[in-house]
Structure formats: structure tokens, C-alpha cells
Image 1 (tube, rainbow, N blue to C red):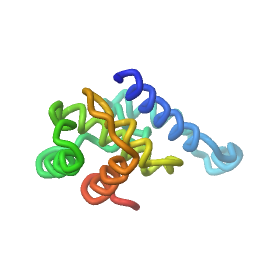
Image 2 (cartoon, rainbow, N blue to C red):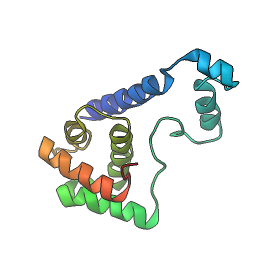
Image 3 (tube, one colour):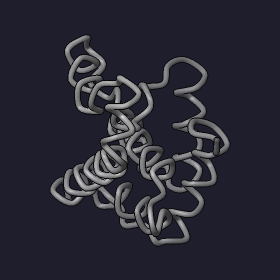
Image 4 (cartoon, rainbow, N blue to C red):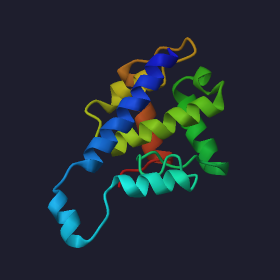
Length: 138
């Protein structure tokens, strides 16, 4: 199960990186900007491990409580390990904001762990909760 979650997270990060790196290089050179890899490297060096990946920063306080409540609303067992639930929520926000093809299925896969298997409908409920709390549509 851990492999599935790790694989989904890696795929999401790669997808966001590929989308972020696509474009016309001549436009960057003409504008005098640096490559998109350079800001990510410096952000990571500054301790911002999620910077540049589309993954939002870890929520704290009331925001963290709201994220956990949204996940718990689908299945209370998912928040037994709160850090795992928050990490999955952060990765799912990146998928939602990155234009995932099937975000409901993605959420169902990402949150299916510790013996809990979710359906795409459950994933839809998680996405609804995340959009209402942690990663609103921009």
C-alpha cells in the first residue's frame, strides 16, 4: 500500500514538473529569466522542500484541524495517523491544482492506506472537503 501512495506522489510531482517545464525557451531567454529548475533548486536549498512542486505548505492550527475533519468525514480511520492524512491531503491538492485527469480516482488511491480502501465516490467527497478547506480552486 505504501508503494502505491509513494508512486502516486512521485507521478503527481513529475506531472507538475513536466507541465511547469513545458513552454517556449526563447520566451524565457528574451525576458532575461532563469530556467524553471533554478528556482526549485534554490527553494529546496532554503528548506522549502515542497516549493515549486505545487504542494502547499503543511497546514497548522485551525487549517490543519479543518483538513483532518474533511478527511475524517469520509472515513475516521484515515486520520489515525494524522501526519499521513495531512501529507496525502497536500499531495492531493497538488493533483487538483495540477489538472489531474481523474482527481476523484486519484484521491481514492492516495487515501487508501492502513487497510482502508476508498471508492472514487469517496475520493470525490475528499476532494470536495479539500476544496472547501485547504486548497480552494483558484
